[in-house]
Image 1 (cartoon, one colour):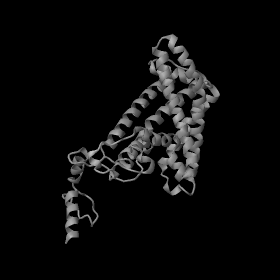
Image 2: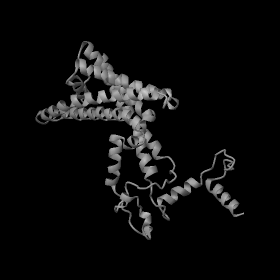
Image 3: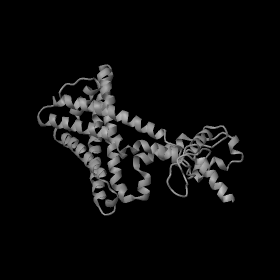
Image 4: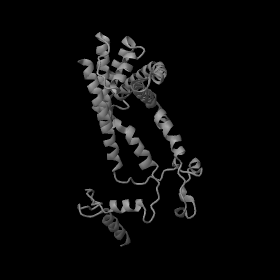
Length: 314
């Protein structure tokens, strides 16, 4: 009964995670155009200009020429930033020493989980001649990477918790921030105890994953080991479902922070998509209550802008 509960919660957690991530992505993708930052270098600038902070705008008659956009340039910035939190290390090294192990531990745990899911599909649906050697390779790396991920995640979460309770960040910490870290410590802690005490080769977890992807709700383990496996699976599934509903969904928002804000340099050409979007935004009513805006809920942004121009002229 308890193991069946773990399967059900795992299915629901994964489905809810996917739905919540898609909902977050759609919400941010429909946000109004951000005011352009004009910050250089822009990572996707082609033609070698990104190296010195240049831009296609420095070209004569740039609007008549084809833009060079480099995906490789973006990856050179995004991959180190995602994996190693480069910006945080440069600007706040004390926080980075706590945040990096926490995030890297999450990556390892998430990567191992994805690896086991792929392995489960291979073992469950491919011939034995293929499944056996692939499964053996996966099983050989999962305990090391999974154990390292759990340890790093707990160390980082405890460090961040203590940092947020300290004088430097106490005034900027909400109760939800502390709850999130406690949730991670609890979920990873139970998983680590299960790993060290009852499942050092991750065989129970791998069997659980294979059963999960093959829709086989067979019980796994018995006694304390089985109970801990069930508790671990439930806590991790709940954590997975919970993450995208909070500010921890910044793993999705970071894409928009870079591509729609920091690196947004698409030209506003006559008849282009930018022009149409800008006109639509300028036609929206202004609801700001600030006196200098003089909004009444009926004037559009274009009306307010033209009024300012008229006042300056007079």
